Length: 442
Image 1 (spheres, helix red, strand yellow):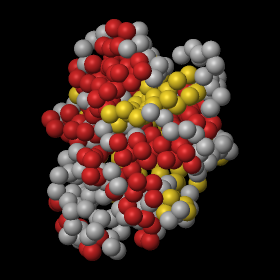
Image 2 (tube, helix red, strand yellow):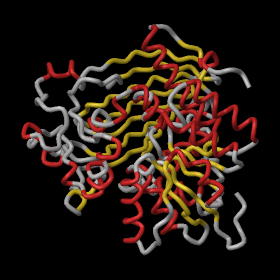
Image 3 (cartoon, one colour):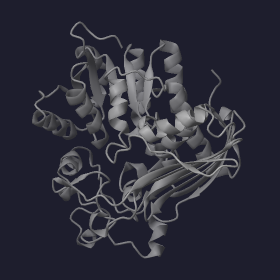
Image 4 (cartoon, helix red, strand yellow):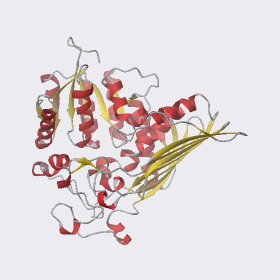
């Protein structure tokens, strides 16, 4: 988007839950010389009011607020150049398509949407309008992931034959998907879409390849009503006001998190949304243990596993090639402290950050006929997705050069999404799924 006469691009944010906060701060603090936040839109006025109060704390004027139904009118009235979509995943396509047809650019949170018809609708709108959609795959901007990309592109392991990727969500972070709207596959696409699209995008980007066929198996093992057999469940529907939830390590205590209290507890009267459901309550329609086998356009394969109830959090990636093997292991935290288990990962607790558990990262190259080599890890941070958030907003909002082509397009968003959608279909059918069969050829 070309800047206006004053040199700044005008942004509006639609969807003012917790995921909007990082983008809002980046616009008004880090990139105020190139961007201007001009409006909020949401289905809930209380959440928009909370964000405006936080803007005042940052020394920024409040911005106009619009009901989500007035989104199209807001674009013209506020002379919006770029729309930031941070709403519930199932609504992304409505805002993306409306903005494109109004001649605006779009930056959307991942996943781009939650199912194949909505994905097709976005891709058709991009073709129809010639507009631009950028998907905020912040993991591409993690310095460690950039390092892996460079090593593979330089031929560190030769021609890539296979990838093994294991991701562990601990019983603090993983549990949180089962308290909120993500627990319903109709609104989130399940963890194969909402969470794993990050990981599938990384593999597409690292391999410079596209997925061809996916076979998968997944189930709800630990959480949900059937998970009560493991002996952790307490008898309450939502944590707030429930004596049974007081010392439950799986209970989110909204009162202990000032920002979450403002965004959700204080906003409940408007839409009835409860952010603190019991993770063992009925109504969970997503999986918590998932295994995927994927084949790519280069002939490479990937085995992938996502576990949402692990005792520690992190991931392992192993890339096998014609000249050796590259191994990445990241420990984000090595255990979950029971005293802070009912918190949200990274959220402030009584105004202070919960103490960080141990973590670290190693990157090892194992060439044929040579000793393994430990490669120094570059630029790793324990904040903002390993430093990725600030690097991403510097490209998206600050115009920083992007030689690694980290800014993901709508096509990139679709390819990451389609791996997860193919996995979901394979869960249902028990059969391999051809990715090309999910969309109409363009």
